[in-house]
Structures are given as structure tokens and as C-alpha cells.
Length: 372
Image (cartoon, rainbow, N blue to C red; front, side):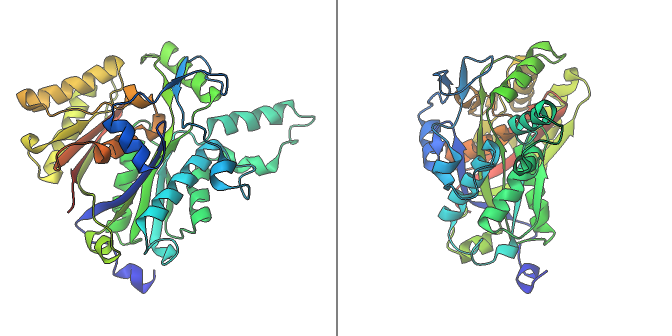
């Protein structure tokens, strides 16, 4: 560890000092903020330019192409999820200013959440290995796209981030888990700043897998449109942010995660996660100004809503529901929820973000939005 790292992150307080997003509204935080505040539907009907699988609508990043966004060099074999992550990281680093990749690359880490990596790449590579003249007649340049840490690793290489590099996968709450993991890296002194968030791509292959899981599994969910996107946040100490001229946008106050083995226990798990997150944050329920739930729909979503309604009672704060606007963004959903909390036209104060997944995990994060 370098001397600069040894005197880095504040052990108690961490802030979000920058963020960016690639979403069905387009590229960048400004496009995302405009779409959220306008309550605009970001999903689009099939138009012949992309295979939506069994779905009639999808929340895809409009006109996104790796070569047009990132250039021709190094993008020939890059999968869509990786390209989205690399582009989002570039926008965040470009807007955040100094003290990052160009100045102290060894002090900046990356924690990126994902579902399976690129489902399309995994299925295409497997298909090629079975249909080629021989099983090993595959394009070796495509193999890196089949591993789930491809997006995180390539983002760090592309932007010269030499700090810790971690991939997190945890279903719908993945973005909250990535934020929590990034906070641990900082508080343990492993780096001074972290880019954290999650990415998910849309593909016909993922669409069919999700459709079969939703309509044929024991935890059936609504077969609404899928989405894609990436949201990344710059997490660091408030002193470091201000030393480089960045204004803290939100303070991380508390996190809590719970597991449940039976869907009937999901409501209790959400309630416990919220209770513990607020306790860790030292925030009263009546102080929460906005809730951003996963809004997953179906019985599971109903249990999340019931837990929040029971917990807050008559003082249930306004809720920002993003899934109806963006589609089901899979592993990127919770990071887009966090971005929604920052983009929403709401009063500054404590914000609660919750997420729940059919596989049995739920999480809650409390942020205090506004300059810190």
C-alpha cells in the first residue's frame, strides 16, 4: 500500500460525490434525471432493429453501439454488457474531475455487479464450440466475454484503475451489495475511492431465459418488459471529495441484508432489513423523505409493499417506482434505483432504497441526499 493510500478513506463517513448512468433514457446522468423527473416510459415496442425474444417491449439503451460510443480500437470482441460498463465509467470519470484514474490510479478501485455477465456471449460461445468443425474451433478473442468479471476487469483496464477490482452477483439487490462492498474496501483502507454499481445487458438470449423462469418456475413473476443499463457511483470520504473540488451528493448512512428460505417469509425479511438499516443509520422512520422499492410486482412485490406499509403506517413516504419506467433491469435494477434516488425531484434528506429477489435475498440502504 502506498503512503497516499494509508492516509485515505475516512473510517466513519462515506459520500457519493459523482454518478453516471446508461439507461433506456440514453447516456449520462442528465438524460436519466430528465427521464425520471418527467415520469417518462423508457420502454419501447419492437421495431425490427433488435430481437426482443418473447417480449413486445423492452427498455434498451437507444442506439447504443460499442464502436460508435467507444471507438473501433479494442471493441471488436467486446460484448454489450462490458461496453455499457466501460462507457458509463468513462462518463463518470470525465465528470468527476481530478484525483482519480489519471492522477492516482492505484488508489481507485472498482466494484461492479452483474447477473451472469453476458448471457448472449456465454450462449454464443457454447454454441460455437458444439457446432464448429471441432469443439475447439471457436474464436479465442470471445472467451473473455464468458466470464462474469469481464466487465469489471475491462473497465479498469480501459480507464487505468489499478485499485481493487471486484465483481459482485446477488440477483436484484446486486447494486446495493456492490455499494456495501465498496464501503468495506474504503473503511478497511484498501483504496481511497471506488467506482461501484452494476450493469445488465438486454439480449434475446437473456429475454428467453427470464421468460421461462418467470412463467414456469415456482416463484412466478409478471412477464413485463425487460430492461438494461448501468449506474455507477463514486464513493469516497467527504474530505477527499472536497479536496478535489467535488461536492458530496449523498451520504451513505446504513445498509442491511437479509435472506429468506420461504416466499411467505419475504415480508418479514424486508421489514427486518429496513429496521436494521434505519437503526444503523440512526434515522427515524418519520425522517425518510422518499422510498425507492424494487417494485418487482407479483406476490413478491406485494410482500415488499406490505412490509413497507406496515413499517411506516400512516406516515408512508412517497415512493419512486422505476420498473414501470425502465423495465426489469435484472442485476442493474438496484443501482438504477440508487440513481433514481439521486435524480428524483425530492426534498433533501434520508432516502430508503429496498430490493428483493425471488432467490431469497433482500436488502435496504439508507442515504442522506443533498450536500453533506
